[in-house]
Image 1 (spheres, rainbow, N blue to C red):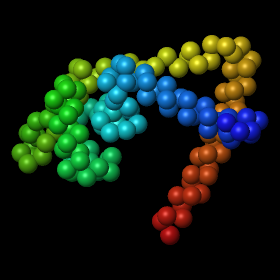
Image 2 (image 1 turned 60 degrees about the vertical axis):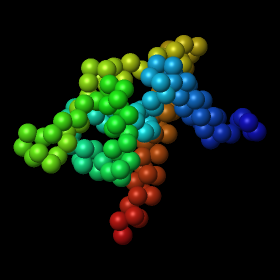
Image 3 (image 1 turned 90 degrees about the horizontal axis):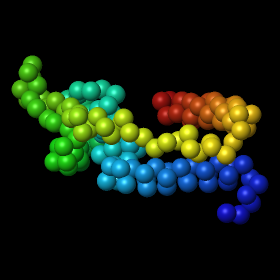
Image 4 (image 1 turned 90 degrees about the vertical axis):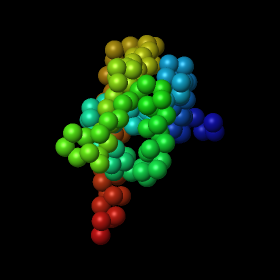
Amino acid sequence: MADKDNLTNVLLEAHHLLRNYNTIWYGKNFGGLDPQQGQGRILSTLWKRRSVSQRELGRLLDIRPQSLGELLQKLEANGYIERHRSETDKRSLIVELTAKGETFQLRKPDYDELFIDLNAREKATLKMCLEKVSERLTELIKQETEDEFY
């Protein structure tokens, strides 16, 4: 990468490498299910919600019903989820994690290994700097999204 001294380039390179690491780790441990995309995103949402209607899940993830149905079929075939009719509304399908689906969120890469070469002071400094960057990013996101509603 050109200009390694540019902080933005260093941060983007670290982000890129972290995404690659996640892709490789989840590929080896969960057949490529990434918690940020597709089927993995559905499992991550179900982990937080436990039980949700298929319609609500599609709304939460902004996925078209047909696309969601295909993703859920694959997850069900692989034993990650179960679907059943709602007791209160027989037209509604309820989606729930199975025990196998639960393991998707319980097992994560060992991110602590990323910082093994840093001493306590370096870790504290990095943490402080990343918190400042995160705060600024949050402000920028708020500024950018405020305009969408006017």
